[in-house]
Image (cartoon, rainbow, N blue to C red; front, side):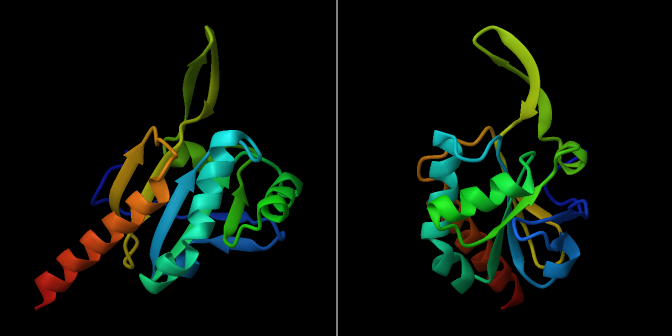
Length: 162
């Protein structure tokens, strides 16, 4: 079961440049791991562009952004180029990691029922623990919301260490 204060399930997937990207490669960093349905659709594009727009703020907070969808590497590469994105987009075409993170679920759209990605964002701390989850994300201003939560979480840790 995926929940706050549990270890984030590890994974290794290919990114848009056909490189293996593994979660454990980022130990010691904060991770913003977001799952989204489809490249180059309006909501997914807005979400990705906002994360990319704030990339320097995420980097200044010691956070890496990783996006995962079931799209192919070719689609991810086009998505990256079309919108000048500046983070890893991972392909999970067999839905293995989507299922591990409980984001591959039954959806309803205009009366049709089908399996699909539930737009979800996780913040994972430098020790690999899930510290915050947004389920059924509303994309507008979501990246800024994530930055604010990261600041809050980092401040709590600093207060504990004082």
